[in-house]
Image 1 (cartoon, rainbow, N blue to C red):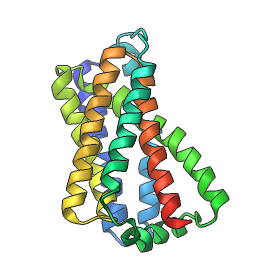
Image 2: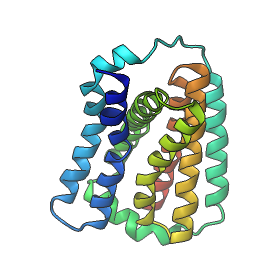
Image 3: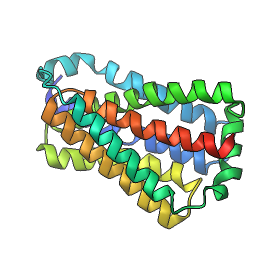
Length: 221
């Protein structure tokens, strides 16, 4: 398959899957919403795999150049910034909605919550890096310079987070935090481009997801 077909039929559609799933889940109150949202998560794994022949053909081999400590330091910086912002907020206002969402997933007991938090921090962050940086961002670079590719990919990455955040925060805070997600996505793209490995962005992503799970734990339990 040509680069053109792979780009237009494989990479570009991938920009919208997660945002559509989040929109349907959070805005459409239906018994099918949970199934659709789950299906989009499964699609994050399967969609790149469906295009493996094209990936092998068009993605040039990259040699890892390290960057692990950069990912760790960036993760610590992100953790500090999140903590600073939240220190000015009254988290008790989130108790009701966080409890409702946690109850839907059976996460109101410490043991289940901790197991889920470990899974989410380690595996969900890896899944998003695999999909958004390795497949989407790298796929966009087949037809774009890396900065436009990073901007477009990071905007799409932020897109579904706006819907998620709108469940917890006011519109101004949703826009602020959603845009911060997009900025983080751009930085992770830059790390992937520079070091030619997912390790720095993945490690940094773990810090962000882990601190969010800790905040959720303090609110719930």
